[in-house]
Image (cartoon, rainbow, N blue to C red; front, side):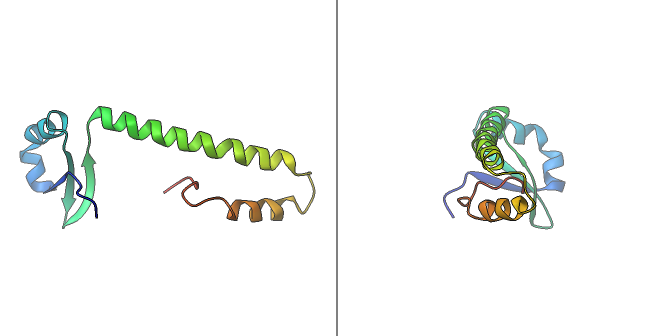
Length: 100
């Protein structure tokens, strides 16, 4: 695991320290992970970080959608189309699949 700057805090403690946690995130550039029973529950990230995450997500989606559209348009509308499209989808490079 790379040296992540995430600071973990239990949800019960985070309630009492929310203002301080917000300052750590906004002014300290930290990422705060709020845990419940020791498991990550939510993360506090700055609005700027969120914008970067969303921009990266959108760029990834835009790079996948055109290739899927071109696959569909290149194939004839025939009963076997679905099977061929499924095979093509399996051969996409790792990490291009949407969803979680």
